[in-house]
Image (tube, rainbow, N blue to C red; front, side, top):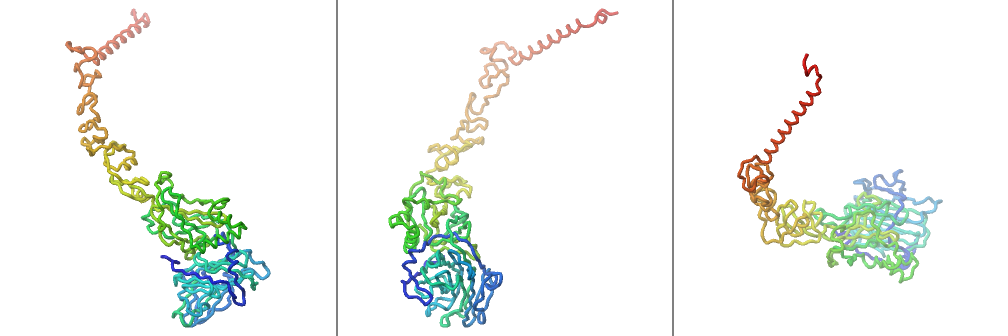
Length: 574
């Protein structure tokens, strides 16, 4: 879903505001740095109890009375007005009157309404949020499909009605501030009007009489606030970063990042690049010029650098120690997928996704942030997302399938992506293309008609022969083209001494001469060949006779020695 594609932003010029404070937009852009924040959490309300429940810590300012009703559902606090209107408001005190306010403040809420934008008046009909902090006060009017500041001079329209949207307020000093919805800033201002104490306030009225639906419903998923920090690190993603199977993720147009502590990133904090193969000359997908320029001006102001130095930093030139991408334990994409030899491919600008929303998921944690794209990540390429908070760059990369050829189990070849190929049991060759199959001798000495790259991938030898594999007629496991010199003899792979079909080891007379070349069968060729005229025992028979004679002589000698050693009386008698 293309949430945010129809969003329209309007920021009016500075003009006289209400009696509460005055906006100076020209300085707001200079003084504010639209960067990701590593946040300290001070308070969270998750919509599981009434706001004014003692455990929640809020103050009931205007009670929900008929026709207003309160309820809970799916982890949300629900306000509903069946007929008519009734003001309902809850407040949270950020710091007691005698305690200094926090040095910086962020304030988030996730909200939805089924009430459309009213034609007139622009504000004050549906839901409200009020922030009082140090020297500024701001009121945000919200409808299901729009939001604005109190004057209506800065607003956003075109939001998906009756759908949750993530809102965020930030101020580094209590004077300059911004407000964004789903990562897109729609209010930037500066105020120098002392507030009555640091508080936040939320509530609703039930709609405008002339335009309200029969029943108006406001839902609050959570309300959170804390202090602003920097340098948080991404420690996990969903789906897991790295190489993904494009069959499992055919339309990957969003993902979740998890920081090591509460954090947020705006649309203009994220740079998108698409890499094909080893191509480093990539197309950069950035946010709209307006957001990017505000980021540039703000960084100049914060760093106190000149225009030329700031432009160099923005382009990653010069002293850019803090701009070097740092991978936070995420699996690198494209590893082993062709390396420096991978072919370069031109990047199609239409293939570069754009970030259109950064938001919280339903009942999500403050450490989790969903990034939504205007189109799916391209298959066969690496999409790189760089999150820059001005101190640390977090890099997340997704590779949706490495392009190449897949050597199928049955011997075929097909263009495919990995890991789809290997998950199916095939052998993958990155950046390869199927060509004319050739006979291939595999390590098993079997012949198979394979693509040459598939043959090599299986440690085979390409024969480059126009002849097909001849098969294994004698079923000895070796094809004729792969070294079987006796294709019809299962006992031999080559003719040897006796030729195919004849054993090279048969030796009936035991003279160590194969029968196929024995000149004197039954006799020792070493003694009687050639001629074989007298039938004399073969060498094996001579050996038996000599052994028998030796044993007889040995026995006689032993008998004589034993007789000589016997006592005389036994030898001569009595």
